[in-house]
Image (tube, rainbow, N blue to C red; front, side):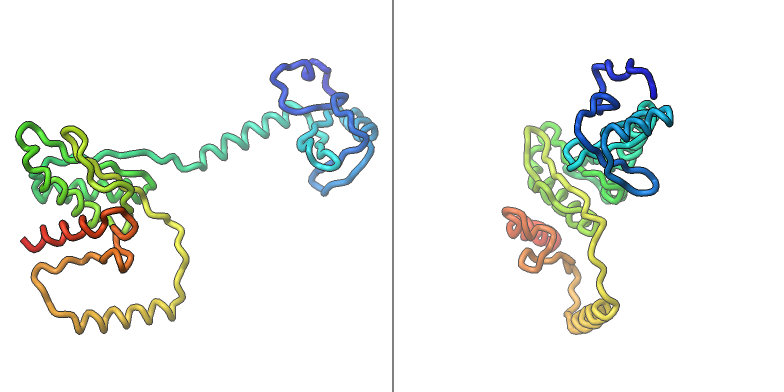
Length: 238
């Protein structure tokens, strides 16, 4: 058993050895668990030259391990580090537009925004109005709505276009990657229904492939969704 120097550490997180004053404890190891008197557990720890470490004080009886305390702390620190590395860090990526962004620049930024969303990051897209270009704020709003619509497959709208000073912001969040898988039979049925619907659909030059809020489209659950969807559709008809 290690010297009691460790027990005087003010930053000690667990009770060890003589600090454990309950009558009996549950010892867990690679072979399972067993309940025994605390004094017996301490004797076993002494014989092995290690410590009795209380890892779950609120259990009945408290759960302990017979292990070198320094080694135990190292394992806990290593496990916490591994868990932290596995956590997905969500960042907010910015995409900037001008009120009259050309199509080439738009497609370039659309590609980057899609990559950001697929990586699990949020996207804050905004149109910057310099000087008298504030007169084109309606055009900037339509641009951001088009942007959100083009990213519908991988992103969802958190905030509709909103003017703040000389900038109009749109916030997008990634869609959850984990979705329930459909059965093959259901996918085949939906494909046949879509093909039948497409065959009977009249061809239009400026057809907008956007679901209405009633059918669960991009702006379905957002306040003012119908109004912004109409703006987007009207812009495509011009």
